[in-house]
Length: 304
Image 1 (cartoon, rainbow, N blue to C red):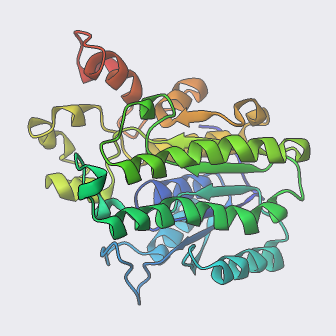
Image 2: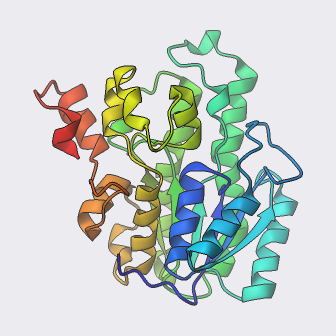
C-alpha cells in the first residue's frame, strides 16, 4: 500500500469496533487526521452492549498507526449532536476530505428467517433508524463542509453488494436497511458530481468482526476453528481488508470513476493490489455467487 493521506481530514461515523474501527485505523496509517465517533465510550455503553470496545480505543489505535485520532462521542440519530460535530471539525480543521458512514449497531435486533408479521415491529423500525436515518442525518450536515474542496469522498458502508442483495436477506427490515445505502450513494453521487465529489457504497465480505468472533467462540488467531461449525466462514476476512479498501479509494486521484457504484472490499483488493492481513485476497461475493448460489464445484480456498 502506497496510499498517502497526510494533511487529509476524515470522519468515520460509527468507528467503535469492526469495520468502522479498521477503516479509521487504516486512514490513520496513511497519515490522515481522523475523527472517530460512536456511542460507546469509557463512561457510557450503547444499546449494543459491548463495553470493552470504545471510541477512545479507536482514536488511540489511529494515532498509534501513524495518524491523529480524535474521539468525539456522538449519537448520529441526534441532529443537534451531528451538527455540533461538523461545526467542531470545521472550527478545528476547516476541511473534511473523507466521510465514512459506518453507523449500524443493529445486529442484536436481527431475527432471520422470520416473516414480517412475526417480526418484533419495534426492532425492525429501530433498524431503519440505526442504519438509514443516521446516514442521512450525517451526510446532511457533513457534505457542505466536504463540498468546499473538489476531490472529497463519501463512503456508504453496508452489508452486501447491490448484486448480492438481489437475494432476499431473510428479514424485510434488514433487507431494506442494507439496500438503502446503495441508493443513497447513487443519489448523492449525482448531487455532488458537479462539485467534484465521489460517493460510493462499500461492503466487506464475511467479516471477522469482534462480535462475529465472539459468536463463534474464536479469536482472530484461531478463527479457522469456526469453519467446522460454519463452512462458509472459510471465506471470512479481517476488518483490515475493508480498511485498506477505504484507504486506497481515498488516495486515488481517479476515484471519481467509481462514483455511484456498489463496491466490495474484495473487488477493490484486486483493483488496488492489496491483501488481507494473512496475505490472501478473499473474494467473498465471487465465492457466494459461483459456489453457494451457483453450485460450482469449488472451495473457499479457490477464492482466497
